[in-house]
Amino acid sequence: MKEKVVLAYSGGLDTSVIIPWLKENYDFEVIAVSVNVGQKDDFEAVAKKAKESGASKFYAVDKTQELVDEYIFPMIKSGAKYEGKYLLGTSIARPVIAKALVEIAKQEGASYIVHGATGKGNDQVRFELGIKALAPNIKIIAPWRIWNIKSRKQEIEYLKSKGIELPFKENSSYSRDENLFHISHEGLELENPSNTPNYSDLLQWVKPLGETPEEGENISIEFEKGVPTKLNGVALSGVELIKQLNEIGSKHGVGVIDLVENRLVGMKSRGVYETPGGTILYFAHEELERLCLDRETFQAKENLSNYMAKLIYNGQWFTTYREAISAFVDVSQKFVTGVVNLKLYKGNIILQGMESPYSLYSEDFSTFDEDNVYNQKDAEGFINLFGLPIKIQALLRNK
Image (cartoon, rainbow, N blue to C red; front, side, top):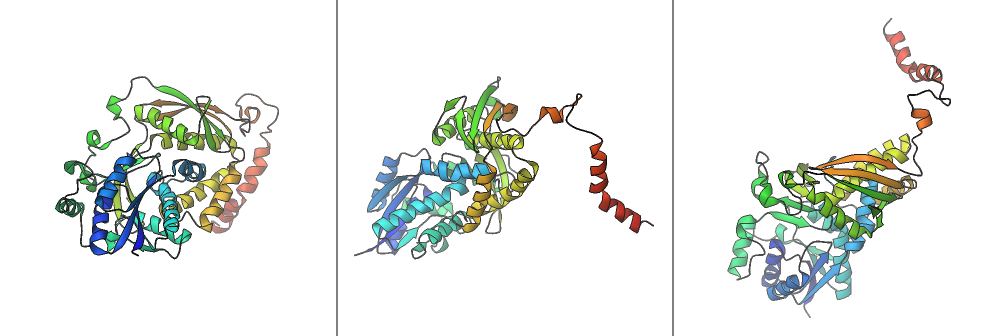
């Protein structure tokens, strides 16, 4: 019997090349697996293409709800933003995809898992760390690290030589990744940071600002323990809530960033990311935390959010490190419950007020009007003690 390999198959350029390449170079039975994480794919067409390319079996595994509940919402609760800007849309989907590949590999008794991530990118690390954590004995094949193909142009030529139809128009071959949370774009003019992105060709979801409505739109988002549960007063599943926020945010030009980032493998790369619903959720959640968290917890969480962002970006989801940070985050969210009102207008998210039964804001203490609860004379002793190290240093070193 032939050894079985499970291929992470999207039907895009890389995986379209990999099936015939595997058949040409190895005596394997190729099982193609497409993991549904909310991308707008026609999985029947993807299945047909996989089998026509030489796959013996095809699986479409729906992980959309799991992605939202067990990965995206914990990430949003943590406030993780890589290098302060990237909302980790590609990164956060990789562990759940790796999990699905491992599940099928175990079911089929496969000896190998194959992925199409390049040897220059982050995804090779994310996929393989996930596989190692969940199935350490399964072997991994990464064609980009071993074949003679060196570029997307050569991939296209290879497909043409095999008589396989290209999965896109040849003159618009951006490298894209799409899931429920975002869509990313790399390649073509973006490879030169001095170039302005060709947004009319590039953007798939979000309207360019010049095409957005002249009137803003007010929305409200309700959170329970840091998790968004209602949009405009209507209870929704996590998947449906993100879908609706994607539509609303896209209409108003919200959630597009042009980013030069530091890849894990050591080089800089440039991408344009569309994350309309995610951008809105991050904004609303952070504002509600400002209302409900005490100072020390809020500031400690700011630091931990950077560590969380880095480990998600680096593919370290299935680690004690991530679980420990998530445990802190879950405790911090105990009282992050309430409603945040927002206005969306021309790419902007404008806070319109918020309320929570666990608000730590006290008008009695914070007012500029006369009050009966705060003795301003107490501040003098506090300042004397707080500033004592500064005063002693000045006295002793400036004699």
